[in-house]
Length: 623
Figure 1 (tube, rainbow, N blue to C red):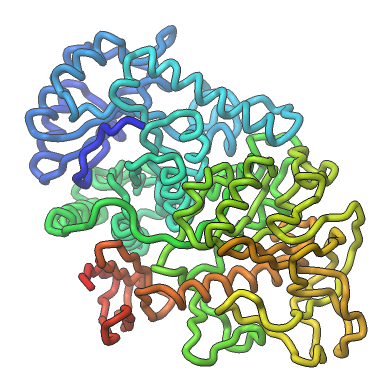
Figure 2 (figure 1 turned 180 degrees about the horizontal axis):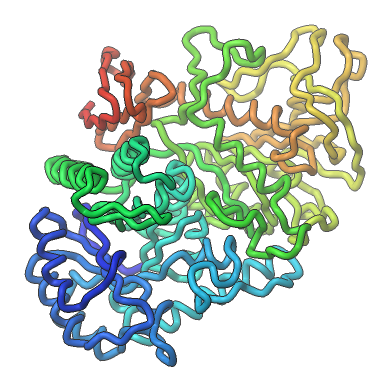
C-alpha cells in the first residue's frame, strides 16, 4: 500500500452538503477550516455538473498554501452524463503538481450500503443499479461486488488517481470488501450502526491488509438521529468523536449539521443553537486533539471476531438480505447473520443471577475485552495478521477453505485461542446447501477430532466434563457429574465426532445424574502447539436460539480470561470505555451523558488508583 498520508491527525469538515457555488468555496475554506485551525477537508462538487477546471486549481493552491489536506467526493459516481468523472487526467496531474502531498485524491461513497443494502435508485433515479439479483451462491455474490468495485477503481486509476489515493466512505462494515478490491484509504460513518462495530471492523480490516491509515466520517445531520432538536443527538456526536479518536482513527471529518440543517424536512439556520452547539464542540475538540500527544498506530487489541469468508452482514441500516439479493427470501438474514448479536455481550455485565457466572476471587464479569477494545477481521486474513491477536472468535457466515484452515492451524500452534462451530467449517457457499466440511471432516490437527458423516438433532442440555485443560478458563462442572444440564434452548443439529487427541469439553445430557456419560459430544477442545482450539459440534450457526446460550457463555468466558491476564485493567460501570497503547498511554471515556463515574485502574507493577470522569469526559493518562 502507498504511504501517502501524514502522521498527524487529520481533523476537518465537508464542503458541499448544502449547496455548492464554486466561486464561494475559497471563502468557505477560509471560514470553516483555516480560521478554525483545521487541516483536512472533503470537497463535494455539485452532482452531475461540469465545473470550470480553474476552480479546482484555485482550491488546490489555497489548500496547499494553508497546509490543508483535501480529498474530493462523488466526482466519479456523480459525473456529468457521458463522462467518467468530474475530474480529468490533466486536472489530476496539475493538482498533484500544485498541492503535492496535500492532495489526497478522490473518495467513493457508500458502495457497500447501496449495492448490498439498498434498492435501485436509493438516492436519485440515476443512482447506481443493484448488483445481479440471481447469484447462485455466496461466493458468486461476493465476486459480483468485488468486480463492480474494481470497475470504479479502474476508472479512478485511469485519471491518474492511483498515484495519489483512492478512498471510500461506507456506512457499513463492507469496507472489508472495498479494501479487498484495492481501495487505499477507507473511512467509516460512525452512526449508521454501533460505532464500536464500525470501528472494530475497519481497524481490523486495515490491519489485515497492512493499511496504516483509516478514518471516520460523521454525517451528523442525517445519521445520528432523526430529530435534530434532541439533545441526546448532540451528545452522541461528542461521544462518537472522542470514541473514534481514542480508538486510533487517523482522520475525522464532519459532514454537516454545523452550518444549517435541512434533513427530514426540519429546517434550522446556521445561527440556531443546535448548529452553534455543534460548531462549539467541533472547535473545542479540535483544540483537544491539537494539545494531545496520542501515540502513533492503533491501540492494543487482543480479541478479534472473524468476519467470515463471503459474509455480507452489514452492521447497519438497510435491507436485511445478504449481498443485495433483495427479492429472494432464502437470502434474507437468518442464523448466520443473527450470530452477530454476540457483539451485544461486549461491555455488558453478567446479571447477578446467572448461575454459570463465577465471580469469586475478583473475577471481572463486566464483558470488557482485554485492554478495553476488540477488532473484527476478515477470516481470509493471513497467519501473520492473525498472530497479532490472542483470541479469534467466529461469528456469522463462513465458507471454509483449505488456506483459511492452514492459517488457523498456524495461529493456534503459535499460541492463539480459537472458537468456532462446525457450521463455520462448511466449504459449501450455497445458502441452505449440503453440509461439506473442509478436508472431508478430518480436523485431527486443529481440533483433535474427525467429523463423521452422521448427524442428529437434540434439545438436551450440556454438562461440562471436568476442569478445562486451558489454564484460567472457568467452567461450571461437577466432580461427580451429578448436576443439572444447562444452556439448553431448543433443538440444534449436531454432527457426530470421533475424538483423536481432542478432549470432550462438554456433552449432551438430560438428567441430573450422569446416565448418558460419555454422551454425545457437544464441545471439543484441543491443544495444538502453544495454543488451544475449541469447537461446538453444532451445524447451526451461533445465531440460532438453541445454540446461542452455550456459545455466548464460551465467548464471555474467553473475554473474561483474557481481560484477567492483561497488564492494564480498568473496572467501572458499563458506560466506561477505554483503550491502552503500547507506549503506556491510557484513554478513559465516560459515555454517560449526564452522570459522572468512578473507575479503578490496575496496572502491573503499580498500585491501583481511582479516577473520576465527568459526563462525556475523555481523559488521557500516562501509566
